[in-house]
Each structure stands twice: as structure tokens, then as C-alpha cells.
Image 1 (cartoon, one colour):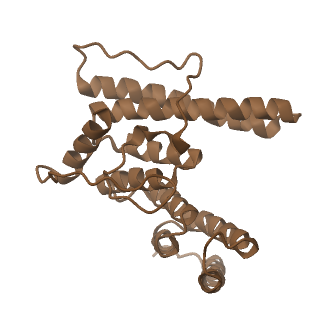
Image 2 (tube, helix red, strand yellow):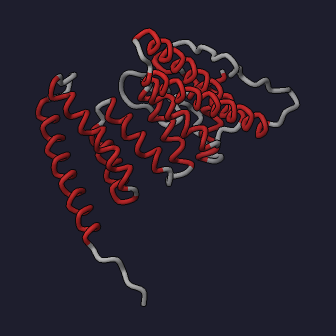
Image 3 (cartoon, helix red, strand yellow):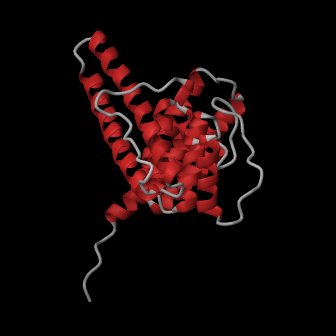
Length: 254
């Protein structure tokens, strides 16, 4: 019931009164794409149960608390959990041995799942909270729930099309489910609006290419080769235009 409520709130926020009377539910991760709004953000990455992080308990919502205030409270708690996840990731990267690394990585997953619950709580109170949709898309991406991440970013970008970091992260999710044409479209959008983010997505695309050259993972070799040629062409154009921009003289004052 909670999942249906959030989707209805979000669709109302995006489409106004013209809310579809039937909510089509797409296939979950892994698999094909889904309709925007068909996946509730609290679906948890990879189907794992949420695990609490000590000190990050879900804030209680008094019956008399207004939805906007409840949304802000849950969002603040979610950001705290998200920051903890990043801290645990840094600890895992610096861990001196495998035991400590494993312990830190376990805390990473716990913190991301707690953030997912808290962002979901925020959206259940305010379905048009664009920052919550943006961050829940990132959490799903980090948890490996790529189709859910795409749906979340669809919501965020429907509310604010200028969220270029959402375009880049959705492009990474497109790659993870082998939606190459969508990933290329994301790159071209970023190429004209945010070259640093375009370069970041290019690195992810090149890693995808290298991985699939070793193991096709169900992709046709011809499609992998075609994508590789496109990457070489686009990377060359990016380097040429970057060099031209660097060599151009600075404009003089009139």
C-alpha cells in the first residue's frame, strides 16, 4: 500500500490532475526498463532487507505533524545516513586488511539501505521532493538496483530537467542494463551542457566496453564492436574540441 501511495503522489506532482487510473508495474531488477512511476523507491537494492545503522533510526512522525515537516525531517535523516555510507566506503578503501575491509563494506550496505528507507519516508509525505528522488536514484545505483535507479532519475528529471548529475548517473544505470542507445544519448546531452560530467560518463562507457570485450554477457559481438567504434570517435572529438578551446585566445575587453 505504501509503495502505491508514493507512486501516486509522485505522478500527481509530475502530471498534475492527469494521473493515469491504472499503474503499470514493470519487471524489477534485473531485467528490462520500467515505466516512470512504476517502481516505488523503497524497493531496496538487490532485494535485500534493510538493516539499521546504530544512531540512524527512522525519525518518528507524530500524527499531528504536517507532511512537509515530516518530509524534511526524514530527508535530513536520510542525508545523514548517506554521508555515513560514504564514510564507511572511505574506511573500506583504506582498510589495512580484508577483515576490516569486509566489516566496513557491511556497514556501507546497512547505511545505504537505511538511507533508502528514510528517503522513501520523505517521498511518502512529499511526492514531488526532487532532491529525494535524485538521491534515492543514487542509492539504488550504488546498491546495484539499476532499473529502480533509472525510474527514480526519471522522476527527478521530470521535476527538474536541469539536474545534470542525474543525467550522468542515469547514464551509468543505462550502461549497467546494456541500454547503449540511451547511454549514448545521455553522453551527448552532457557533452553540450557539462563537459566534466560527459568525461565522467565516457570513462564508465569505456570500462563497459573493456569488460564486454572479455565477456559479452549476452550482448552481440557486432553491437559491442559498434559501440566501441562510437566511443573512439566521440573520445577523439572530445579531445580535439578540448585542445581547440585551450588554444583559443582569451577574449579581450572592448
